[in-house]
Length: 255
Image (cartoon, rainbow, N blue to C red; front, side, top):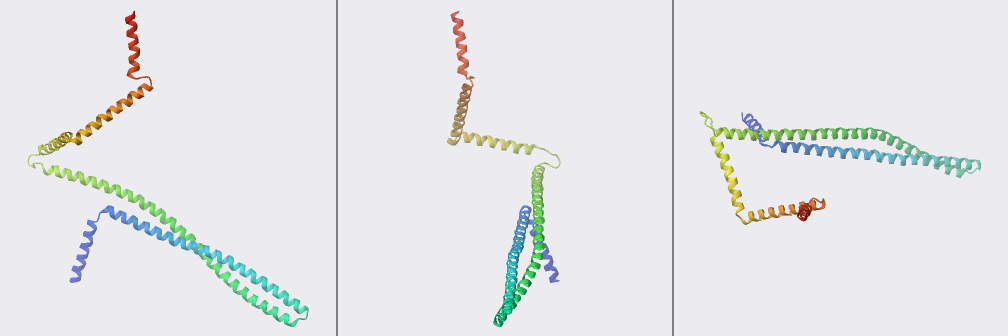
């Protein structure tokens, strides 16, 4: 019975914790976890590809060792044959032993090359699979990012709807159920308007408000001066228009 109650308490706690957690934080946690997994996968793939590259270098070195041991063994055999033709028993023994030693090295080098070649073939397959896994995971990460944007958009819409619902409920709570009226709402709006106008009026009476008004007047004056300057450049200034009119009036008076 105690175990049953303990499981119930754990289930209730987990459910309560999930309900209290911000969905936006949960989405970001999922993205962070996916990015970490993607980076780990890339690192593993890089290690696999690096192993393949190392095997390539080892195979090249092993092939050189095989070639060198083969050539040395051949040369030792030729030397033994020359000593045999010359009747040099000691020389025959010497070069034959060297040839046998090189043959042993050749066999070991060939075995090593065969083993490395088999490992390399496996590493090629593993590297291809690792790169394919990275590509597939990258696509999943893109899909997850798109899903994140979709979920965040849905979450914002839900929050906006919740705000609207809260506003509607707030307005509804101020109304009389028996006789619905918007008077309270109208009073609230008028009060807010009056407060806003009062704050603006008080601000205008302060040094800061006067300074703001002065700055606005200076900006308007500067803008008017700049406009007249542009008109003058285009030959459209008020002074340019006034000059022909003055000439016309002078001519009329002369006539």
